[in-house]
Amino acid sequence: MMLAVRWGVFLIGITVFSLGVSISINMQHLGIHPWDVLNVALFEKLGLSIGSWAIIISILLIGVSWVLDKSYIKMGTFFNAVLVGLLVDIFLWLDFLPVASRSWSDYMLIIVGIVIMGLGGGIYNAANVGSGPRDGFMLSISDKLQASVGKVRIITETFVLLVGLLLGGPVFLFTFVFTFIQSPIFQFTYGKIRSKLQYLETRHQHSA
Image 1 (cartoon, helix red, strand yellow):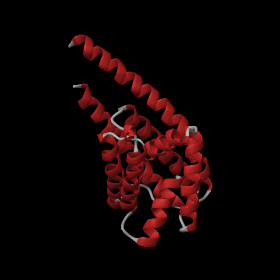
Image 2 (spheres, one colour; image 1 turned 180 degrees about the horizontal axis):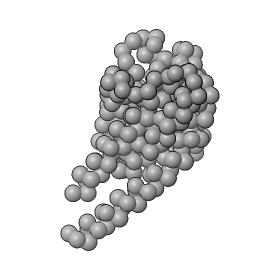
Image 3 (cartoon, helix red, strand yellow; image 1 turned 120 degrees about the vertical axis):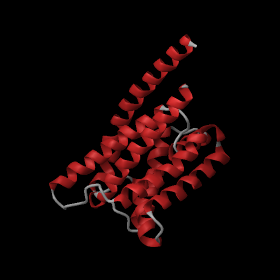
Image 4 (cartoon, one colour; image 1 turned 90 degrees about the horizontal axis):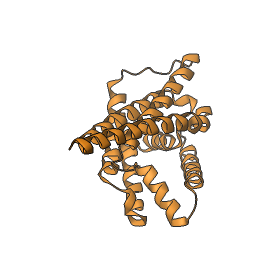
């Protein structure tokens, strides 16, 4: 029962997160998350789709994590790798999201996108069915090098950003403030959903 609930929460979170990514990509002239800068740059240079590159990079990161530390890879990690890219492509293909108008409203929309990403990320991580490919990669690197996760995240995302920038990806103001907006929302949502799931699990065990 609780496993089904956790997977349901995971899928809701992944969908919400992907929606946020898609909104921010539509406002990319204001700058997007470093990993999405790379995905958009590869799409513009080599073709395929933004979601396809997200999947390819995620699978590569899972491969590295698998070699370094398998403990961070669960079934949800693989679903995350495929579903986020797939859903982003679907949302962009459906073409129902607001597009850039090059006015003040774009700033509001990209903030909405970042907030939705924070909510979605907190929800799917709280389900605890597997770290995302990027998170698992950074955690495994952190363990291997005996370095803080924060330091590994900064170094990794700076490198990814530089590669994306060299390839002509959309880097601007919000690329640098993304984490400051998203992280607190992620942490709040993660804590709330995680405690709620733990409460439900405890009740379920007592009633069994």
